[in-house]
Amino acid sequence: MTNAQLMDLAKEARNMAYAPYSHFLVGAAILAEDGRVFTGCNVENASYGGTICAERTAAVKAVSEGCKSFKTIAVATSSGEWGAPCGLCRQFLYEFMPEGNVLMWDDAKGIKEMPLKELLPMGFRGEDIK
Image (tube, rainbow, N blue to C red):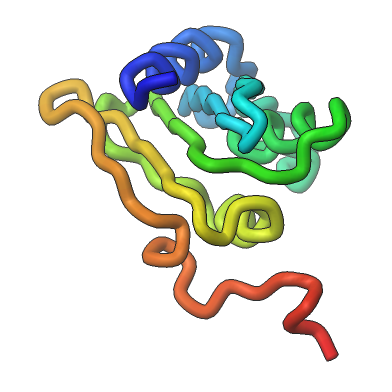
């Protein structure tokens, strides 16, 4: 799967977003180590704390299907500019892809790729809890 193909899936997932409050649509596509791809979109809730981001939706779908190791996640937002995962999503993703990469979409500039470790310096996992 190429980065462009993964991003296309994220853009498709963005069309399914439920964002009646922020109107900020986000789609994500996560590539598992075994080659499977899982997509997700943001789903808002009137109780804002109940909202789930696209990145976590995709990751939770993958985990619920037995996948717990990811290589890359693509994120596409409705802003048309690069949109990085929020802090909560960065930490959540770090649990499953500390060496993974994040792809972000900009309508004018295309794909930007960054290691998750650069987006979340000093992230931690279970083995770091003592």
